[in-house]
Length: 281
Ligand SMILES: Nc1nc2c(c(=O)[nH]1)N[C@@H](CN(C=O)c1ccc(C(=O)N[C@@H](CCC(=O)O)C(=O)O)cc1)CN2
Ligand SMILES: [Mg+2]
Image (cartoon, rainbow, N blue to C red; front, side):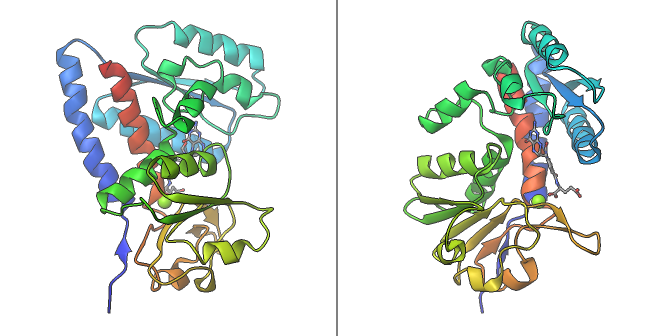
């Protein structure tokens, strides 16, 4: 019997962060302190945790972080003014605005104002376009982390049928582009897709980012599938679960990411790596 390979994002993120420590040390020897500005608007409790984790991970690898915590009532103009200031500050190499933003702020307008050469999230329309033209400059951290996790486990996507469930700007759309750039045959499905489960059953590689707890069951996958679960949901018992029913799907899969400890930690590692890359330029 074959054992299912667990795609351990915690372990790989640790390895990446160790490598980044050396790169930040070399930058500091050259008198460059790689610096990341993190902007959090409002008091969303999950966002507060993610931002705290980003600060902690950044400090561990030797990055400086600049913390901007703005009130829930912040206007679009106020946020744009802060971004304009950070864009021209030569001591800042990366700028990130934690999403989601409060409803009075148009997040598309905000991401379009970040200097593309400081856009560590890869959300600026120019960076999105470069990704789609297969000339990426800065990649969204979660999809980038997924590709690195697959590469680390020698999972070649070329020629494979990759099925993406979800079409968000943060995960679904960019991972579809990255898989296509890597020569996969890509099907993108979403909440309006007819017969979605017929499509997921055809996947060699299944990426699930639809935001519904344990949505993918054993009957929705074929034996030997590689499953990447981007979901983070609380179930009725308050336990963190993915968009894939891990207990059902794991025995059928060739490889699978756990939740937690899969894609999530990779997101933060790739954010730090992009900041270091910008500082090295
Ligand atoms: N500006 C951005 N906003 C958001 C992004 C992003 O990449 N850029 N992604 C998500 C949130 N996110 C980072 O910001 C993020 C979410 C989760 C994790 C993570 O490590 N999750 C852990 C579990 C954590 C828990 O126990 O609750 C895991 O999966 O193991 C990292 C980053 C939306 N906003
Ligand atoms: Mg995870």
